[in-house]
Image 1: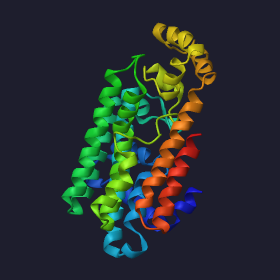
Image 2 (image 1 turned 30 degrees about the horizontal axis):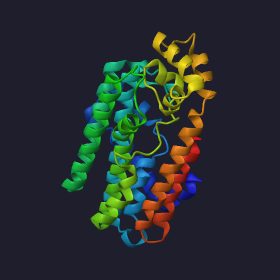
Image 3 (image 1 turned 120 degrees about the vertical axis):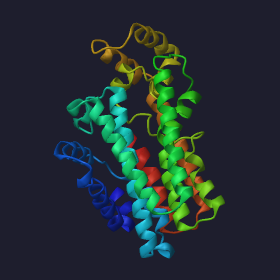
Image 4 (image 1 turned 60 degrees about the vertical axis):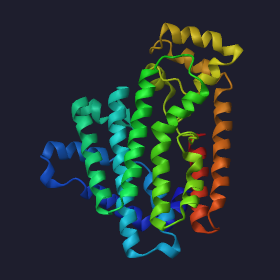
Length: 314
């Protein structure tokens, strides 16, 4: 399904892949550094962020060589920013794995992983500077600031059982939705869309109204060990049938010995169902916002991405 959605921009996504590899400039590093950075690029995911830039930027009426070049640069920068945030996340979360492989922090150490993330940030902003668009540069700078603010809040509020759903959604809106929103907005800006159209389309992914990524994508156990309570856990805490027992376990502290008991309580609650209902609600709101775009492949493909994200989680 996703291959069909990406089909109109597949050649440009291949260019993004080549640009990501080319971002590791030989003059910047020794062989050990290149080994680490190449390893990180080897698990770069589905490139949803680059696609969110490319699809609106390269509608049929905007598919010029110059616009394609600029969109590829912005899409590459978005992927580099995402990789940088993952490297830093793994250090903060003390993660041992990332996408089925040892996390770079676990393999090379936290310091090297943080510096690798900083390198990717620097390369991303070098690419953004080359397109000579201060508004787009400022857009991604604001997204990174928002991501960092969300990360800070998550760690300062760890182990708090009284986290409200609203506070949780606001936090993940900053931590995760802000970069997705920047990508979609940048694509519209590159396409020359009117400001009101760009604002309408990204409204459902603004920090105050985030999309459903963090609901179930992270392993429940990893979040719990770090004192990060995701939406299924918060919903289970609010249920009379499971809340009291779950609260007692969380107060005592989650470890490998009682993890399965915690998982069973969450699984036996309506947490997953409530989370899915909310994800579907955000999907439907996103599809409604897309009606601001004229009918055609751009609108259809963005709608398909919204559907794919929810289907992938559930």
